[in-house]
Length: 313
Picture 1 (tube, rainbow, N blue to C red):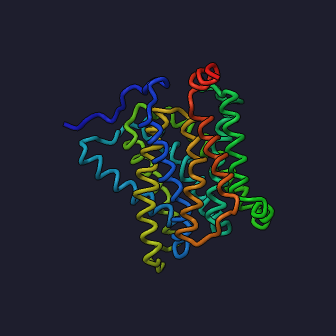
Picture 2: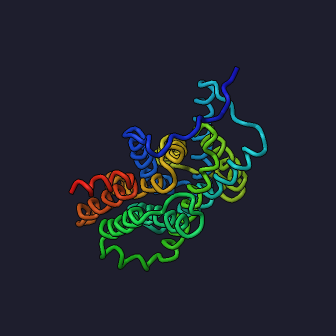
Picture 3: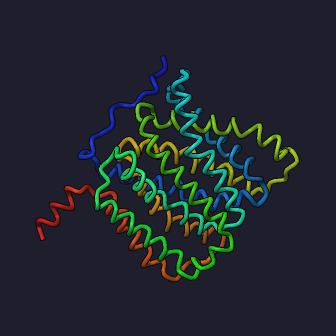
């Protein structure tokens, strides 16, 4: 007999522990590798083929793991509609946009621009959905994170953004889609995170495959070994493990806290861009990192804990 693909009820916010925040850090590590690896893959693989390939690699990996665990993928239309919509706004559309933009924008700049998701998530939550308390503390965290983002990139780098302004605006629009996906993703909390990740990635890779065959003619490509390795590593590490951790964090930590990992991705992603691509390090990285960590703390530490700490002063 196979186990049902349902999850137990989410833990209450008061029950959050260090393991939950360790998952948040692990998610940041997985997703921060996305943009340097994409830059490597795009060296010899066109965007649509690259995204389809890494999605199918990730889906195949997760389906094998699910088979070993004895968990089946749901077959009802309702579940697959949820998977399809979530994949469209959380991966297919934004990653197509960002992958195209990375043809013109350095990986380190992309990391920072794509890490503004928490700001958009906060604004959408505060102004529209109101599904979580959008407290002043979280607003402070969003502001600090944005200040850290500017500090890490540096004013000199910001002055050069206009050269590829359309690509940079496209990345920011993609982060709005990411923010919407984190809010919609709460509807999937009843499913095992690995099931959601596998179903979503399978849908996304399958939908893009015919487009890749028609547009890119992948049988005529000559990808480098580095590009092939980047595709597989990104599929398993960034996509498979990343999406699984993402849905786990949504269930355990909620939308705004899960989005706070976007700021953690900045120092990790910039460091990977330097190591893997040889991109330059902003001189004021230390100041930016302090601001980023302060922003993450403000968006993740429970308000009750802050009030208790202030009363002790």
